[in-house]
Every structure is written in C-alpha cells, then in structure tokens.
Length: 588
Image 1 (cartoon, rainbow, N blue to C red):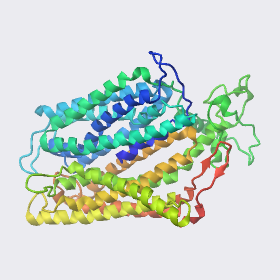
Image 2 (cartoon, rainbow, N blue to C red; image 1 turned 45 degrees about the horizontal axis):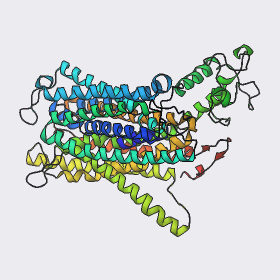
Image 3 (cartoon, rainbow, N blue to C red; image 1 turned 90 degrees about the vertical axis):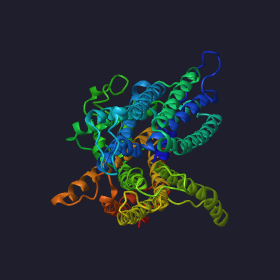
Image 4 (cartoon, helix red, strand yellow; image 1 turned 30 degrees about the horizontal axis):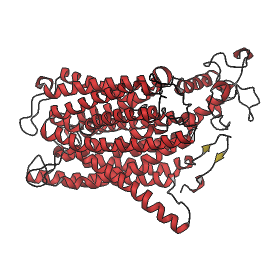
C-alpha cells in the first residue's frame, strides 16, 4: 500500500491560491529553483522510511524474538497509528503551522526515531538474548519493549508530519492559475514519481539486503544518515520556497456542522428550504472556493444552517459564531463526505487482504527455502517488491497497450469503469487469500514431514499471492482513491487524501483485532491456536487466510448489491452542474 499512500497527496493543493514573494537574493521564490531541494529531500526521506517499513516484520522477528500475535499487533498498530497521525498532521498543517514547519518537524521526529532504532540494533542490552534453537527464544522485557515503542512512536509522528505535506508543498511552488504553472506542476509530479520509484527500488533491494544479510546496525545507520541529509537539503532551500500561511482546517468546519445540527435537532426543514438559511457566497466567507449546489440528501444536516435568531448575524450579514450558525456551503461539504462512506467501507474490507502480505506473508518467507544457488539467499523483505512490479506492469499494459489498441478499434477511449475496477480488485483480494492459504498448507506440511523449522519448499511459491496483492492495489486501491478524489469538490481534496489514510489505518486495526479474536477463540479447551507463537508450523495460518477470503466474498456481495449505487462518479462543476459518467442502475 505504500506506493498509493505516498501518491495520494498530489491533489491536495490544486485548488489553493499561489502566493509569491521574492527570495532574499532578489530572485523570485518558488518554481524549479525550489523544487530541486524538495525532490532531493523527498528522495532521501523515502529511501530511509521505506527501508524500515518493508523490513520491520523481519527485524522484530529475528532481533526481538516476537511471536506471531505480538508481532502482528505491533506492526499493525504502528502502521495504523502512522496513518492516523497523518490526519493530525494535515489538521495541524492547515490550521496552525503551515506545510514547511510541519514537514520540518516531521522530518526531525523521523530522524530521532531512526537514530534510536539504530541504537537498539547496536546495543545488545536493548534487545532480548538470541534464540537457542528455532523455538526456544526469550521474550523482550517490558523496558526493552518500552524503548522500542518510543522509537516507533517517533517514527509515526514523523510520518504524520511528512505524508500529508510532501507533494502538496511541492505543488505550492507553482502558480496553477496559469497554463505555464499547470504544465510545470505536471512535470513536477512526473519527476516526483521518478525519484520516489528510484528511492523505493534502492530501499527494497540494497538497504533491505544489508539489513538482513550483513548488519542491522549498518542497515539502519544508512537510512538515518539519509534522513539527516534530507533535512540538510530541505533547509538549504528554505529561502527559495513559497510558504503559504495556514488557512484553517475543513475538519473543524465538519465538527461545527455536526454539533450545530444536533443542537437544532428539534427544528424542521421544509421540502424547499422555506426557513431562512445562512447562505453567503463563498467569495464572502471563503475566497477562492467554488459554491456547491444545494442537495436534498441527508436533510438532517441542513438544520445547521437554519437562522433561528436574527442576532446570529452581524451587521454585514455574516455569522457571528461559526459554532452557532454554519453556512450552506459547510453543510454541503459535510454531505459530500457522508456520500462516499459506502464505497470507502468497501475499500477497507478489500485492503485487509493486502495488509496480510506485509506481516504473515513475510513470516511465511522466513520459514521457506530462500536460497538461489549455493551462496545467495533472498531477503524475506524483498517479497514486497514483487507486488510493486506487478502493479507497475499492469499500469504499463493498461495505459500503453490496452487503451491505445481499443482506441484504434472503436475510435474512442474505452476505459474500465470505476465499478469494474473495484469489483476486479475485490475478486483479486479473494484469490490472493485462497492462493495464500493453499501455499501455506503445502509449506507447513512439507516442513512437518521433514521435521524442520524451515520448509524445503522454495520461497518462489509465494510469488502468486504477492503478485495478486499488487493487482488488488492496481485495481481497487487506485480506483477507490480516484473515487474519493472525484466525488469531492476541489476545496476538499485534502479531505479525500486524509480519509484514504484513515481507511488504511482502520484496515491495520481490523487486522490486529481479527488476529487476536481468532487466537482467543481457537485456543479454548486446551486446543492448539490457529495463530500465535514463534513457529508457523505449529499454527493453522491457512484457516485464517480462508476467513479473510470469506470476508472478501461478503465484501463483493455488499459492493455489487449496495455500494455500487454510490459509484456515480459525479463531478461538482464550477456552475453547480452534475455530470453523470456512469450508470448507477447497471450495478448488477
């Protein structure tokens, strides 16, 4: 999911006004003069962060002797908390600090986290003693776990500052009101993806190999140095940046609407809004924001804009207190958020299958034959690379082969609809879990038949499930992200990114909840639990995979018989028109 997570910020600032000022040396701030520093900072930061994210499961298993349940909980809760922190980071950036300071403080927190992570790898007293045999392992002490959790908390705080702002700060450097600015912004996105891909390839190959096969100390010291270098590059360009002042957060507006609608719950709203409502033009209350068309859905929220007492307005007809009277614009923005929830829930259920590969999929790789020839072993963390390769290959085939050929045949673009892509992604998630269950059963049986901890089955047998995981991201994750973005007006693009982060966070928390519940239920009456412990050979991981496949099947039914009706791909235009691009009646 990391490639999609980091790509979603690209639309966050398309709607904001660009404010220019002159740098200290007299040259105009912003533009490519500033971008070179931003891209340098972004490349080294991503190389550092992704090398840890992709290999954290292996590190906790081999260096902290963590068993299945504790390991899954730590990884999932940390991943979920990093995404929740992104919501807090977006709020703090928009309302208080601005993007430059939020990025800087986030980078410093990440540097502290990676530095202390290097210490835990280099000081033996900060880790439990090594295992004597494959299953006889001492568990980390409470104070050792406390030190580890403090490091992970710093990294989560850092991610919360960096993720919502990295691309958005780059977009701030261009004036998107001009054709030249929009063209430069498109070039920036291309270069950002290029630098991100290069950094990701280095992180998932060279750095992960050093961590797994040479030294964890060196493998963490390199990302720490990269983070330090990224901060230096970022600060070197500080006089070239366009730094916008915080304008306030739309999340606060949503809280106001909900609170005011509840306060006025006893009021009635007529069928044609006969009661006076507070409806100033956006130019008066929110300069630069396009006015949304008033809708008849979720009428309860319309109560937040009702004018109960004329004294709620000042002499210019503006609301005296935003917590006592909300505008129709604020109400309609909140309705946009509620309208995407059915499809958003589909995305959460679909992402659960992908989430398993970064934890249980890596644990499977650890207990399989990883050798290629007599002198080389594949690091388990490399398996996530195949998901990325599958995603990239599909996008290339779809954009460069499928679309051009169809265009030649029917003389117009014929792209897969959003509903088709989400449905295909759900099917891929089901297949991913079924294949993973079949492979795990074969891996486990071969290991038990040999009486060994590591199965003689080659790790290449895991490729299909990792490839399918990449296809889930290519179809479902990209489509859900596109849905969130297109269903939101431009003034709410930051919200679209934030709730996508929230879906990833909830996915991690649900995964942790399922693992703990299955462990508790299956160990009753003295039975061997399906999950838990240091040795997968003593578990029944395949049954857990089949349960996730069943969740995917229920999700497929839910989407195609209910949520698909919300995939209408409606664009709110500047004049309030609604453009219907898909037929909601054709769900099934």
